[in-house]
Structure formats: structure tokens, C-alpha cells
Length: 402
Length: 130
Image (cartoon, rainbow over all chains, first blue to last red; front, side, top):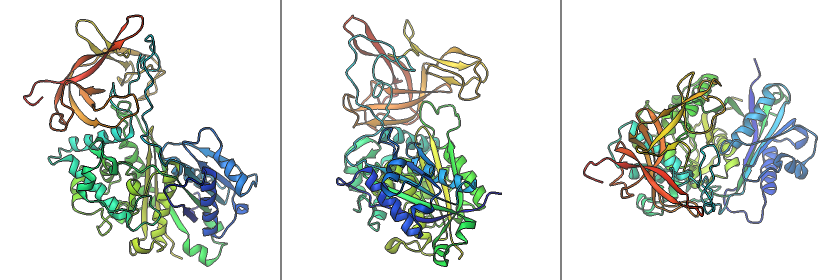
């Protein structure tokens, strides 16, 4: 039996615009602060896993080392779409679990402020003569001609598919806008969020429509940011100070899945099956159920996505996501608070940082350090991310008993 | 426009069906993603009528992509197909989940050699609202 792994130190930078900092600055800031938070230094790290999705082929891990310490440890540069940060963390956890290191560092960073619409590539003018190319033998660009490749459009369909399957009779636009209203309200208590403005339902519904039913504030906010975490083995933690042991957060489950084949999954990405599998595995590993969770940070890349994940993570009865949401359960004063950080729609979504920033939010509450937005008495929390393609990371975290 | 659209008297879509497990795909294949078999695929004709399972009305897209357009996933007798809903007002009053649609062709353009490109979409089957 592999030994338990703990989060010893963790940090997220302010999400937003950082025109004066590059990815290495932001990643270094997060990494140094995470190690300081854990009371350790780069010399204690036995492994580094790092991710930066939009930065191209450059090895972000080694670039970080060149600023904060080239100690010769193995570096894993990881990429898994929006699950990149969770993948970095999972990699460091696996190294510790495998006994190859007793401490590891995971970092995710992104510069995304002003990036605009993701997923869709600019359509080049059609060629002078039509030539079939690619896996569909297409003679022209297909985005807009055969459905949509833009993220707001893809996830709009994910949400619409759910309400169709479950025969929701109400107005979809208002339903999804209410989810966004909740997350924007939550963000007012989070000083590290990119946007901290409360928005009324009317403001949300009256904003620019991007892909029905998602208006602009219902889409994740592109911004800059980084997050980093230090993980430590159970036996190593026992050699550290009482204070380090008290603030350490136990990783009760760490799961990464990809999408198993389903009938329509290569037509519309299936974000459900892999999330359900990850959640099932995570609850098994943790030995708890969704009813034990004091808070959940889930991947609300669009308002339409949050709804389906209530069901996928087992937070509600199967098929009951709409009623569950409308009951008020997922507001911060509800029985299962979801995205009290403000979620990706207001906190922001610097892609590769997101999967660690979600963990940071949960740890912050479990340590009782979340200030004004503290969920009182939080003992167990879950963090979920999904990257299209697809990859899903689920972590279940528990407050230290020390 | 794509090699899985077959023109002629009754334009239709064709899928590659795994000869081992029956999973269907529209792209060029190396093997089957459902069962892992590399024993080959047969071409099968996809039903020309179907039901809208999901849609979005895209009003903001990448440069060069005309908006608005209605993107959708259509269940064609058990096979899911991605395509635009065409010949309909692009608003939520006219496009509905579960609406019945049929395959139609859409002109794409003509290249410098005079070759015409033809695409496809799905249009509503009359129900009084379209």
C-alpha cells in the first residue's frame, strides 16, 4: 500500500492582468510562495511537474528552475488542456506515492489576458483551388460550416443536451444565467479573483451573447495567473514541525481520467462520462461520498458546464441537476456550496493554473484561512477540472486532524 | 466539402462502421476507438432525417466565420452527426431541442478552376413554426 500524500504548501497569484510579468515571473512567484507557505525550499524538492498550455514548446519547468533553483531534480513538463494544472499535481503526487521523492512541486501558469475566443481558429480564406485535406477530406474550413469549434459554443451544446435529455420545460437561458449570477455573487468575497463585481440576472442576460445561451459573463474569464503546490509523503511530514503538520491538507483522492468511447463523443465532446468515472474512483479512494463534501470547486468554464457537473459529480440525484441548483444548494449558504471562489466565470481561467488554483481554494477553507468567504467548519472538499480532448482531474482533500 | 458527404440524386452522409463492434466514425481511421480492432471498416449510409439533441446559436466567432449560425448535434436514427441547422431563423423561438430536421445541401463556393463546393446542413421538417 502506497503511503498517503499531503499538500504541505500552496499558493495562487492574483488572477487578472499582469502586463509587467511573463509566465516565468508568475510561475516563480507561485512556486516560491508555495514553498514558503510549506516552510520548505527548492532544495527539499525531489521532483518538479509544470504546465503552461499556450506558451508553445518551451519547457516551462526548466525555465522556472533557471529562476528559482537548478537542483538537478527530474522535471515533467505536462499538457492536458484545461486539466494541465491538475495533471502537474497528479504527476508530483504519483512520484511521491511511488516513493521516488518525498517532496514534490507542481506549478501551472498561463498568460491569457486579452486572448479572446478560444477553440476557434481564424478561418483563412478558402484556397484558390479546392483540395481535400485533413481527416475529413475537407476542402474548406469547417468551423461555422459544420457546427462550431469555439469553446462557448461547444459547452453551450453540452448544457443544452443535458436539459433536453432530462426534459427541462423552463427557459434555458434564464436557468443558466442564474448559475452565473451565483458565481459572480460569490466572487465579491475573493480578492484574488479577476472580476469581483456582483452581477444581476438582468445584467448577465443583457450582456453580449457569445453562443446561446452563454453571454459573455457566463463564459470563463481569460486572464493571467499561476498556482503552485508542494506535496509531501506521510512519513516525511511526520518529521516536520507541529505547525507544518497542522496546516497540511491530506490528499484523500487523486484521480485523472480520459474520455472512454461513447457513441457521440467524437461529434460533441463527452465531458460527462470521464467526470463520472473520475468522481466514482475518487469517492472510492477517499472512502467518502458526495454528501460528505463541505465545498466543491468544479470546472464551470461556462455556465452551461456547471449544471452537468452537479450530476456528474453525484452532488444531486441522477438527472436532478436543475432542481438541485434551483433549491439553492450550491450557493455559499446552501448545503453543498459550489465555486465559492467565484468560479472560472469571475475568478478567471488561466488555463494551466486552474487545476491547482481550485485545490488552493479548497485548502484555504480546510485550513480555516479563507477570511470573509470561509465556509465554517469545512473538513472535506473536492476540486474538479476538465480539459477538452479530454482529461478530467478530481482531487478530494481533507483537513488535518493534527 | 467533406468526404463523408455523398452527392447525387439523394445526397447523404456516410460513416465508417467498425466491422468488429459497429462503432461509427466520420474521419479517416487508423483503428477503432471503441474496441481497438484494426480489422477494418465498412461504409454505411446515415439516415437523412433526425432530431436535434443539442444546439447553440453562435453570435461571436473567429474572424472569417460569418455569424449568426446555428450549430447542432442531430441524432440520425441512432448516429449522432454534427451540422448546422439551416433555412431557419437563428433564434431560440425557431430552433428547438427535439425538433425534427432533414439533411440538405448548401452551396459553399466555386474555386478558380470552376469546381463547385457543396456542403450540408439540416433544415426543419415543417411543423408550422419555421
